[in-house]
Length: 479
Image (tube, rainbow, N blue to C red; front, side):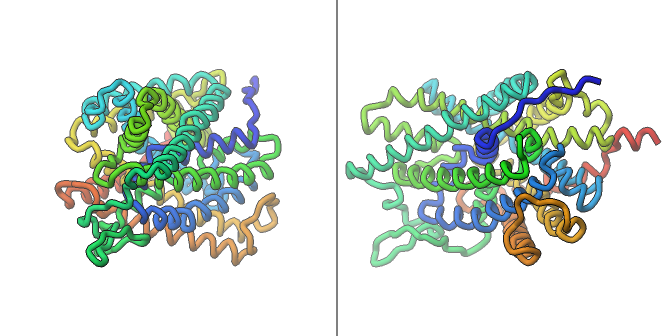
């Protein structure tokens, strides 16, 4: 049997692919919507989520860097194949449920590129765009791994890093020229974001919390920082994965933190609070700034670049969790047809199955009149599933310190066993808290019927979580 030849991957390529998987500019308007309290949310997400996840993923990735499977392999080695399957299933299915979210962002951007900004809030347009765009990304992904790496790396640089830097420069110029700053002119009605002192409205650094609905956006922010472990399945393609993979994760964490903080703050500086739209706020900020500087002709150009970045983000996720799921198919935990690959070793049937599911999920935009609500509802279901996967990952990191203490680790979570426990508990605390608030309707969005919102998120979480316990793999069918 001829062994499939797979291209090697550098530290730069891994850092770019992982950054593209985590960071999408679509999240900037959501964070910017929090005005000055964005520093609280980003700080919380970084300390309680990104740093613990990166440290544990770096240690586990260094241990099993030469093996395929990523999260599946880590959890399998700690708790057995079935738990490993549940973990990779949660990572994969949340990924599939999540796709309509960045695709809606790309749809809103495309609407402004073609000069039809009103289509950004049109559910039919958004749904159709999501379906067409995703199938195009799937077609690209089945070609070969080198094309995927190039699209992801170049797409992230030109479609995420470059537009973010341009946005920051525009915000600085906006401030230097004395234009009104959005965060300095908040409406007094946003009690969670501002305070009235001596008849003047001042932005808050820490949100005023009268109920969990005031911080429900935290679950959406957490989702923006999730994914640091997703490309661990490709670590074995690096020449020295035990050393290079942790370094790539360090670069990734710095890039993500910097872009999210500076980019979101730039939007909140340029745009008034009431004008920030969750899906189209980014391109609207460019539109407003470029118009002020008589550079409106730049809007379509930057929009095309942002769409390229969205394509890179989607493509990055298409080949990550599905690759881990392929390993479970090879271990006969999934039906045999899911293990099929093409000549390049790409999991064709799994990609087709997830494309069909994404098509069905994109139909949510045909149902909800308010695209912002549908946008956040899908995100809420996504984060609850993903957070459950992180519970497995942290638990695996702690358990393997006991069951495989002598296994070589090129990178270790600092502090020995106590350090691993501290980081694991810190990460689990952030996960549990975020999981709880994800079920509360965000006070910042008109969800209509809060009870229906909670019911839909609950049903989605339960249904997608129990599916792996009913799947019969090739091994089970053979008995």
